[in-house]
Image 1 (spheres, rainbow, N blue to C red):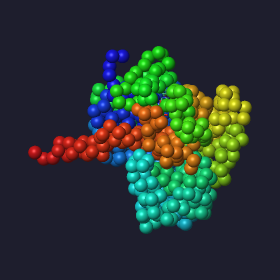
Image 2: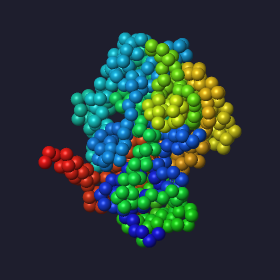
Image 3: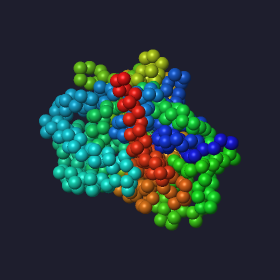
Length: 537
Ligand SMILES: Cc1cc2nc3c(=O)[nH]c(=O)nc-3n(C[C@H](O)[C@H](O)[C@H](O)COP(=O)(O)OP(=O)(O)OC[C@H]3O[C@@H](n4cnc5c(N)ncnc54)[C@H](O)[C@@H]3O)c2cc1C
């Protein structure tokens, strides 16, 4: 290709697209390459089952993303491209085996009333925990949406806050301990534990304490927030923005090798034999486990290499997509209800058995812990009139004791058991209402996207050993890789997985700094221009 590009972006997940969008706005020409036929990684909407049924193949909830300054202040002008969010009034419905339920509403007073059905003390605890987290949330956000080393680490920020010492202890504890100690009733505990699980981290792990607050706060504040048109609308818009600034995005370009000249990364080579050179830098969202095989061993610093070798995949998901002729329907207050999301956790200690199942490499369909989400409830345009898309997500280990390949033998059996469990609460979803289905085991998730290494939807475990300044490797958390000219973004970097855009914005901030520019100034210029455009003549 005769075209000249400043930045070659290897992999088109939402984070690398976010980074490329900031770089494009700063005047750099970006070439984005992805190995798949569709851009967007885990943030894509595809007709997986039948024509007209637009399924979010992986991520649906854009809750965490809303706190990114990119969204909060519309720094990239994505609203001008038509990015619009839907915030359903019923956030999530948790049905229980005894026939009762707890519904979370976007209106906090209604949610608190639901807790009060089971315990007045728990109702007060819910309101208190939401308020407590809100008071310190800006400190956590500031640390997440800032590259490592650019500002104070979160513990230093907490130490300066009047309640900071309490939070130093809270975040070091497990979500399980916090929920057990704050709630007395098992229904309340189930709901809170299930929420704390939403970033696929077992609630008994140390350093999960904040998740007992942050995930439920996010759903309470933003609801089960989805983009109009499907999850993939976000990445489609980011690609359009990059192209509008002179960039190019190519599909079916699996990067296999880094081009290194005079010790500097200057481009990439793809599986089809094509190669692309970058005038300034290469930005990768290739999984670090694959990246280190794409350049000679001696070019990687020893400590970086060691950290990648010891990287852990962590807990993994099992996904079922359905096209249906009816919505999921549950017993609720005032009669049948059709929520966008359903939380299934049979009893509190069931949440603790998941970590054990992962350790012994066993698929477990005994009272499975499930999320069922139906974006068509919030946005009916995602399926033909009156029809629905439903996605059931469970946690199952990639590493079965028989080996990951065994998933191909058992996935339909596991899917059937999960669907039966959902039917226990939504009995209307009989076989005749199911028009088509697609099942993806943890192994299939890795086949779909090589960045889902060992099935992990977050690039790897989000535990104390792989968080913040230790992600992806101690000493290498600033997006600059050991080979000069090569930068890393995506969920293997701080602040990790989920649809947050954090690793993308942070990587852009580091790269712009290295190029002698400043992301905050870039953003302020746009804000000034917007203010001038709207000022009265
Ligand atoms: C089933 C499922 C449900 C989820 N639900 C949610 C949710 O509701 N809310 C939420 O916040 N998060 C959710 N997540 C997690 C979230 O979607 C991911 O953590 C996040 O999207 C990862 O983004 P990323 O930018 O790191 O890269 P990815 O989305 O992983 O994209 C990486 C891209 O790089 C490409 N690539 C990799 N290697 C190469 C190579 N060698 N050459 C070329 N291209 C390459 C891949 O093809 C891919 O397109 C879910 C994930 C899954 C799997």
